[in-house]
Image 1 (cartoon, rainbow, N blue to C red):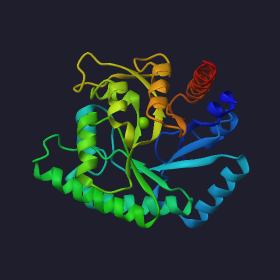
Image 2: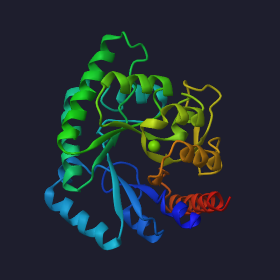
Image 3: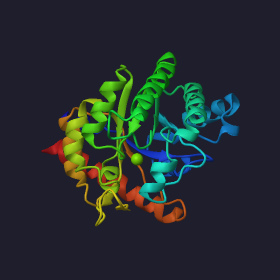
Image 4: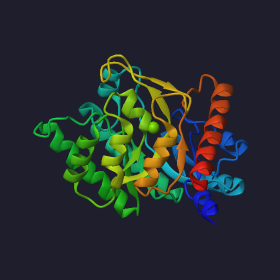
Amino acid sequence: MIQVTQLNKWPIGVFTSIDAGLGVNLDVAHELEIPTIQLHAPAKSTRTSKNAEAFLQKIGDLGITLTAVFGGFEGESYADIPTVEKTVGLVPPETRGARLAEMKEIADFALLLKCDVVALHLGFVPHDTSDPQYRLIVDMTRDLCHHCSVNGQALHLETGQETADALVQFIADVNVDNLFVNFDPANMILYGTGQPLEALRKIGRFVRSVHCKDGTWSDKPGEEWGCEVPLGEGDVDIPAYLNVLDEIGYTGPLTIEREIPQEPERQKAEILHARDLLNQCKSQMATV
Ligand code: MG
């Protein structure tokens, strides 16, 4: 019985996309028999109710469950850490207003997809909480959370750009009941913002979705990117990651993220390998 219980929690997932963002095609989830997906929001022009209905029909036919819709914006670039700081999320002041409005539209599109979780990279929140921008970003996030709340949705912040302590402080400052975390252990390493498992323990009570991604530290953490690598080959320590997820009481999907769309065959093979690795870890944990 223990085995069955363990295998029913943590359904495997994969990060997917349709016409924007770097996720894999839905067909890959189907071919690899992965039962849940997160979806990068499609391009603005295709976020129609007709397309939402067709998508729901398709995932229904395939027996796939949508667990989160991720927002992303034109003009974002992950080329290097300074570029992320300038271009990603709702933090850059030049695009903040337009992107906040678009993020609300994405939440409304997620509602058409009957999805109660919306997520995003918020961007680099200033580390100095007395920075006037910090207060503006807190207020904007509260505004977005209110919009999501009216839709019956939670907002999950992707980890990476902040330390665990800064993220906990930020969530406390926003002070709403529908703001949580999508924990990505590799991002802590890639951005150089802290040991992932230590961070996971600190943020644990807010973690409502996760990415399964691996990476290696750069020689200059926080200044230069670490390297994203196939699951199990980096510095995360996947069995230990699952142990900490268990420790914090997380039972949701284990969503594999592997964004190398320029090499689709390799991407699919590595997602398959990640799926098998996660299932193997789950089985081992269930039998101890
Ligand atoms: Mg991620």
